[in-house]
Length: 225
Image (tube, rainbow, N blue to C red; front, side, top):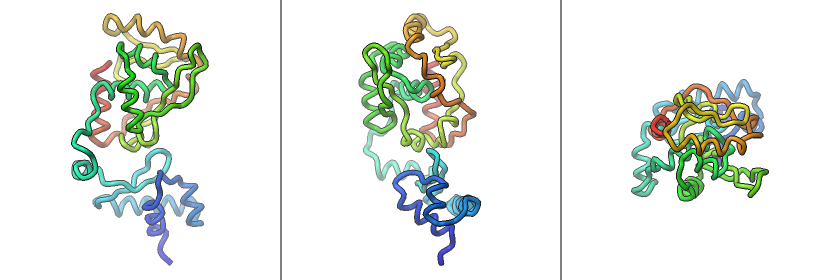
């Protein structure tokens, strides 16, 4: 009978989404300790191969090795693959303040954001989470598992720390240090509308980013603060 490491590799190869430890245990009939040990061994075996094993989005997945990212992008993606600075700024706002509405995003950015929000939705980086229970019932947006995978994040806990002076939620309020003239007044308009979501915001931990796309997001955050 094939060893557990090979069996797990086969399962992960056909998995459409990151496979959780519980799912892998159920599929193989092995106990969690054995599966975790086999996953670590498989990850070690693949470290210098074209594919690699990564823990992303709450599960395990076989992906192309980030070392060969440029080759893969040239092979799979159309010529224009970059995310604009405006889209990166919007994506950063959603990642850190989610669930967040379009008016909240526009208040922070100071410009209409319909186009960039639509682009981020089309690329699968953000999605609708429901509607906020306020006048007009605006749509609430949050990031997707594809966002975590694309930026090589295990979870939102792995987002880099916000630069000093960037808006954050504290007790349901958006709190910010002094910002350029014109934005402070806009920020005041969203203080009342962000209450009630503080329990839904994941704490931000230390950065564990490894690829170029993630570094672009970090740079966008620093430049937009």
